[in-house]
Image (cartoon, rainbow, N blue to C red; front, side):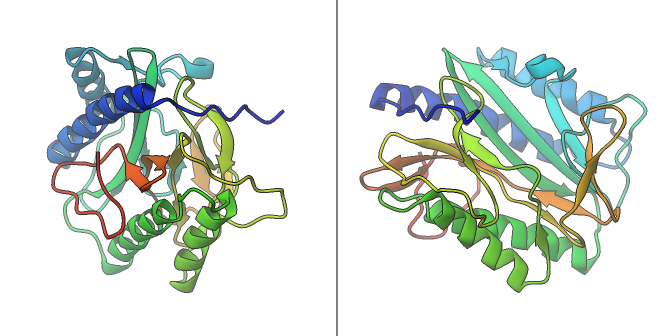
Length: 264
């Protein structure tokens, strides 16, 4: 059954702005601490500590049974990688962080991919194209457009550069609940696509693979990996649809948004 689409009041969007500021701060802290040898368990601990120190609760921990606060996905892992003391970052890895918090009853959610040490040119291109696709999708989050306009902006940019978009996992509405309607696919399907209107807040999150778009979930029940085991990248922002255009709520320190996007 499709999840309900809940429009947010200006007061709720303001709280979501604060929630996403915490998310963005945690992700920037993690990016600065990425180095070969650090365990994904340690990264999870740091993220949880950051959220709690800022008066927020990690949103993912316990959600449908997820066992950690942070999703840490390395190389061929697309999303939902489970932190572990046994998994250490290595030079040349791509590592994706997906983090969410609940703050005063509202949710924030964002993700980014970081290079560990030196990575080859193709991996760097994968990251760049994924982030560019995110910006194009966010720019299409305008009142009067449809969800498929976001999907088309992401898909066309990615596929024109020789990469593929994941179909099994999609973006979503967010706010009172971590996952609300509408779903925000990164590809244009045949389903009916609703029109965007002020008050919607969406988590737009391209997941882009170097090879095939096909993914599978490992035996742990969570970790999604590419079927061909080639690398994947993931970028995500929470964006409010307003009468004056899309407003990115999870802008990170030092991040420059292309026009016409604006930060909080």
